[in-house]
Length: 398
Image (cartoon, rainbow, N blue to C red; front, top):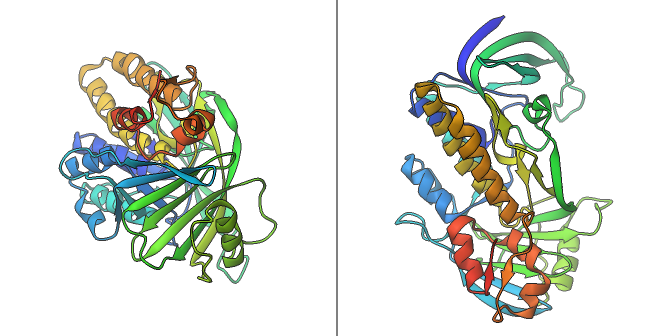
């Protein structure tokens, strides 16, 4: 089967969904595919920065998050077992008075519903297998997957098989398909590692009293965080030395809190959810070429604590969609290579310290100097808002 589309978006996470939505708002024909099933299970909580909330508000998407998210306005920073600083969370416009934590499925569902209202539906279980381009178009081979007749286990997990091949011709392709991006591999673009992979353990636990409007960051040899979630739940995140040999439980949470956050009472609360994940700090050699471009985790990864990869990725999605819409309208692709590619690389080289260490002033405290890279990756801000946050510590990104 063969099909044509103006833009093919590969990957239906929040970044891909926003890119597809913006393209439809610009009047373009969009196809969006994802190799996974439509996931309705409990999802990872995300952190949205003030600038991201303002952008989502501009797109008419802010309202669904108000009653399901938890706002936070202060960052309390600890180092060496002591409270070192209280930072105000950057604001951005009238809607974005601080940051917001939110279940990822709430964000995804809001974006997907808005996309469906534009007449576009995600084609799940469609895997990109090959990608090539010439000066006139991009040619993609996509394979539809289907389960075999019987599940492999009582949990309903199926074995999958390839069922149908689809040939797609697109004016442009956007790869938002995560760390193992098939689009990035199809373009032959490598990743430059900024730091060794880091393993993090996550715990969602009831919090008494309710967590309120502050988050806590603990910087040191390991970086840890406590974020408030909606409904009196707290997300604890701990950097681990190695992958645990058994599932994380309430006892492990108590051990980590006593070791890393001893100012909290060691309660006997239950753990509602826990998980382990490995994160790299890496950046692509380039953000794309010709008619195929990358955004979000397909192009960069960093610490989960500051959620910088997601938030910058959402802005990249909008910027890339607008750039492609202009390129299709004018026939000029120069903005994508000299604008999008150059600007994205410049921002991420600063965030990952590829361009050199940040500039410090005489007022920069010794604890911030000692743990600067971990602190930089853990702050929930980017751009001018991050610059303002760091300025209070006498730090300037270069």
